[in-house]
Image (tube, rainbow over all chains, first blue to last red; front, side, top):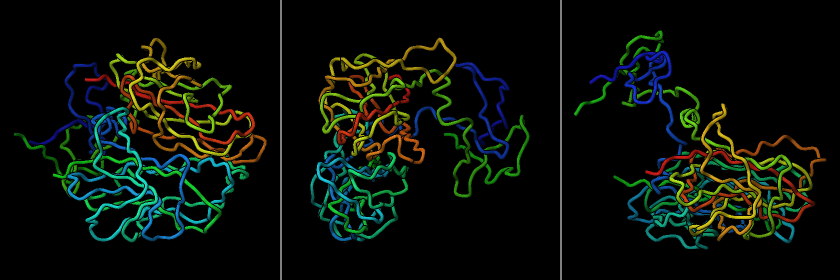
Length: 216
Length: 215
């Protein structure tokens, strides 16, 4: 059965609820669509989207790729799901004592080869993005994790040598809408980790949001 | 069972309005589509999208810890019959010297039997700007107190010790959430700062959300 429509709005005028309409096409025959809700609503409202954020006190972003991950999202073997990364975000926390960020870049990293054993580290409480949902995620999230040797995927953002209590810069937001750019299969993980100068006791708060999609 | 079929690359050179046409497909079987309107048009045009912003005088940003006060929140009352799908959050500088730290999205860890109280109520407005629309179910408040069991979701942005007198680039602080968080009845979604004291730091905040019937 061919999918046949009309170029432009067949009804000429906006239709009323309950009217039967032929589907609309653009002038280069792309099917014209409209979003019922926000981009993530369907997945979130079904309880399939999760968020993990490191402690608000922050932790070290790292200086080189090694077997320690500043932030790790891991998909255990036999989880039965893929982790589809939706967003990553970062902020610099408040601290009573001054700290200075080490200049450099923050990267997304992963590891080569299947991880039979789950990583360890400081566990992060994962929350469902359908706020209050009591379901449990398949993924694990850690700060300062012990993982297989990291390999870089691509940069997330750059860091300047900001001094925590004296740099008078304007507020800034660091968020990357990945929208499925990276998918983490069971036995693998994705990390956020820095390749930076040492700075002076630098700390960051890192977070990820992801959808868990059953593997079929 | 009917198969949906189209033609690969069909009439990609362009066709005039009113022509019946078979769907265009990509070379790997995908249907080629394009947005008829802007992303939120359908929901906004049906009067389901609302926005709530703090008074232009702004409010205090936060404190040194997560407590029972939230700078800006959207609460979904029990029995509302809708989910609140978060579309957008924004923040702006008003006055003072900001305390260094971060703004976080927050929520409550258990069902709140009553709405957070003692905050400053915000008049939320429909994104369909024509007047006479239904009032939102969601309740926006500034500096809500007695916020139950607040927990963090993820960072919104970083604040440094910026003062308005200092030269700085314009800084739009807008986060396109697009449904990343959905607030069922009995829960709230908030913005709150964990920051140094600064000197009378005042900012403004806003949320835009869609109200989706629970079925």
